[in-house]
Image (tube, rainbow, N blue to C red):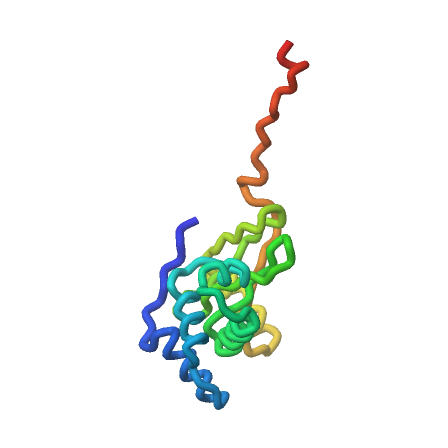
Length: 160
């Protein structure tokens, strides 16, 4: 599958975060700024442990609170959980609507455009008199890498 394009936005994610914080009577501290800049430095799915490794040593509680604020502000969203149970995050601001295929064995996330799914959701909503504000589809299964037969190592007795 091809990588989804980013969408041009008028306000940078960090400035958008500052605006959101102001609506809550909060300020963009240097720690929050650093976390937001690191989160938006590339578009990769990540969990809190991966983000912590990329940041300077600091307060994990501040990182978790900042991630929660980024989700509340509509800049990030929790997509799924890793096999170990940790939440996986992705950008929600400046990125097109899309859905995910999620491998239950290795945790791989595959993004795909949500155009057809969105149309089905809109059609059902019209039939039901429902106003759609968004959707999220996560399809669970096994990725092609995990489906490949494992190379069997020959035991010494098999080689005789």
